[in-house]
Length: 253
Image 1 (cartoon, one colour):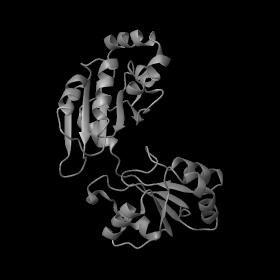
Image 2 (image 1 turned 90 degrees about the horizontal axis):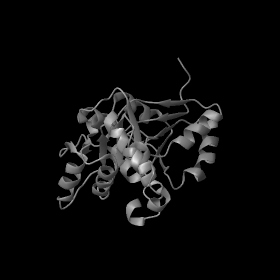
Image 3 (image 1 turned 30 degrees about the vertical axis):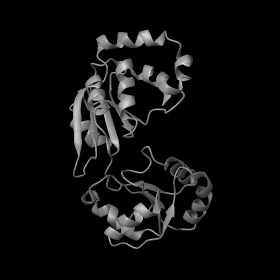
Image 4 (image 1 turned 30 degrees about the horizontal axis):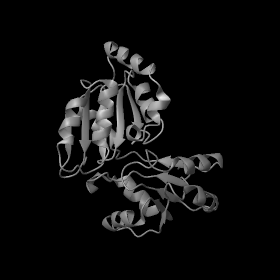
């Protein structure tokens, strides 16, 4: 039997609680402490699983402060699970810092397979999945337009996470840089009752969602990679004044 991991990254359902794995349930039941983004959200999950475990908040705003103490406890033999509010921890969520420091101290880290939002969104898009680039969230302010120009000629399928209140602006900006005819797919409320995937061009998706009174649910945006004839478009933007665009507050939000 291999030595039990000191830290285990445990994916949790992104919407449908039936997506929790048997191995994840067993692991959560065996550890001494569960690290989570929001103790209220994770507390409801553990209650549903009929598990009683101590919870400790571990999120973007406190991870640098709590990691040293967590490492001390792990080194003494405590076992911990790291979860996020939904999906696999460490993917656009805190986790990297703790994993890196555990490995640096020779502490065994394990990551269970399980739910993550971008995989079903990618496969449902109908675009090529043999080569893709997961971009997570685009920069909100400085560097946003520069990053879009860099990605305009990328031939791999592109995957982004986006919030509902910013999706229309993101689609509009992508249409401006990539071209309004570039095929794309928007998936929201994945695995939930009102799951929805819209596939059209960037321009069409921007217009469709702009006409809605309200958009709810976290969103995965998948954009087809650039074809050879499209790469010429990006060269036009390379000659623009990037710094001037990046400093435009409206363009960066």
